[in-house]
Image (cartoon, rainbow, N blue to C red; front, side, top):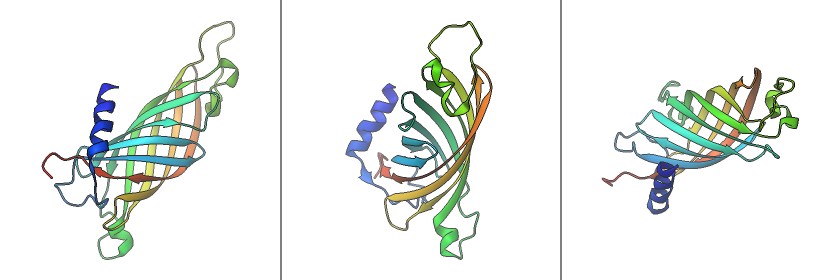
Length: 180
């Protein structure tokens, strides 16, 4: 949690970064974002290399319970070629992550629809793993992006359950490099 606070403090003093992220010097970049779809989340992505990032999010559309998750993403820049505008500006990515849900037992694990063992007691918390695939459009010479993402997830505690989430979202990129 402390490291997230440090990253947020750096973001407050950071300058907007071009979202192309094609130059090797643009590797220390953070991007707060928002998504909406089958779920909705506020997120913060951190690129630790040109093609690798981690993304942490808090869902906001799952009242009366909450879900948090973190994913690792690998971008495949140039997969669609460099000759077309689409190929230069759109990057596919794949990822994997894990998360936790906090809810009342009467909610049956939210969208995972899991079942509790009869006669047990507890808060109703659960844990899941997820895979992520998406496309992100990096607007040329701009600090914002738009993305589409699909992510199947599997509840592994307290019991099995699965769902597929589909979202669209936007991110705003900040350069937090110390050698600007």
